[in-house]
Length: 377
Image 1 (cartoon, rainbow, N blue to C red):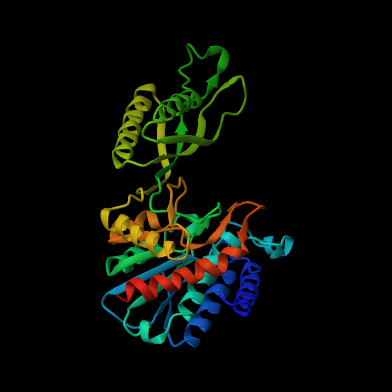
Image 2: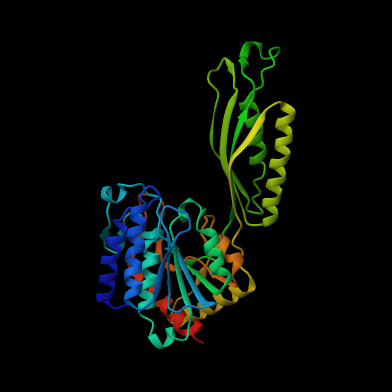
């Protein structure tokens, strides 16, 4: 990437980062979509805004209308930072580090997609069918867009997810992520005076919830890398009142699908325990994302990317991640899926989120090379 192109990239990145685009700011997500709609139209691509029932639409760009796509590139336009954050700590550059809300997660990845495609010769693009989809709701689990994203995956051969590579001595990409079960439960017992609890028929919702907490934490398995966390609890009204009400919420993360089955069996058994104890339990929220598990085709593709990177004197490194992305559900609908394909950074979701400026050119150029040297073969 030439210096003048990098300077233009950084100006565009500043503009995007300084747009609040969390779920409480749908107009900001729309501003991001409108920017890419204009820029992809300018290079002759067909664009659309697809209503998926979220606060803002999915942005879609295609170089051709096609029944099947050689390459599917995706990322998300939303961030976790509420309205007003960009004004409080706008985009800044300090040496090699760019900071600001969403600079790493993941406005850089969206922008690198655009710049990489711009750099590909039209004669190459004419031989390929490429679709780009930027979703509006990844940071809340893709509840609205996931079906659309999977439909696109079903008619595509290779998916590159433009989350940031992890910043280390070399960029670290991802082909394996844990799956998740997120849950929240409400417990209803029977209130009574604590001093008479042995005779007044009271039943503690908190006591039952405690049993659930201990049981769920028993799912942790270091060897299988299964984790469990009860992150939110509440309940009760006073120390001398047997608690009628309690609530808990948490998550279980797993690499193996059989671990998800083990967790679900446990929860079903806990319902039986609560019934016997005289406590009613209501599940008020649940979410399931499968693990991203690399198949043979993806591993072979990564070997190729490592060879291609080797021509530039570097390696293409992959490592497991505990966090989630759209790759969790996309990967089960497509032959090849590689995540973490954006420029390098770290600190997502925090005030110290950053992007390594010196990774922008090489990683964006590498995406162009993938298109030119592999997909066009």
